[in-house]
Image (cartoon, rainbow, N blue to C red; front, side):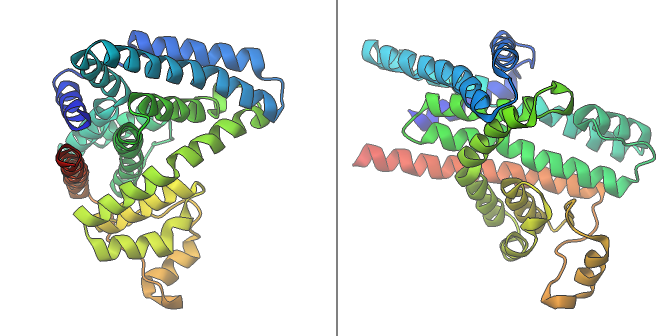
Length: 312
């Protein structure tokens, strides 16, 4: 049931993308804002309480509905799984930014590409060169593909089922929403949501990175994973981006990489080699292929697991 739930949800999401302003997302946003405003008193324990107040009811309710439907009829539980995966996936919620930037670059429309990248990331893109546009687009696309697709896959596959997918999606949302610069949340309050998601995402991030390595350039991906993951402040994102960089053969230097050390790395000093070439618009097309190959890999593994369960 798990394999077909994911497969049908993916097909449904590709046919009819879920609107970012849908009712479920609006309810979650309202719930998160209410909890933050009511509990943020500048201490970490308040962040813990607020996180639990948001996460537990949603996760418990999804699990309760699933078991109730499964008790009534297997088909109803199957439909519930499809609905949950459909609402927790977000492939098309970020891919249109990626596609529009790719199209703008192919048409040599640099102002439009900068505008879309700014809309997506909020970064200052004025006079940004093409290589930097591509690099930042790839960075955000790699992380988004994991958090909106592969991370959800993992937590849906584990025994928690649909409740696991909801747990992952809400934890990711709270970590991101409560730590935004304009969210007016205290650092002590938002720190727990970030740490909780880091723990929840630790295993999925490394499995996604391994998937990128398998379907891409394995040797360069593993080398970059071992030697360049520290260039990003978040260890999970660092693993994803380093492995993605090596798998793609694209140089995605992180913010913690010193310019002087990059020159040394490119020259082969200190026994290290900077993996990949400079980013070009063609690299974006390679990234599309990498992500879809990774999706197919996960689906094949899930299919084999499903067959093994049936034959057991």
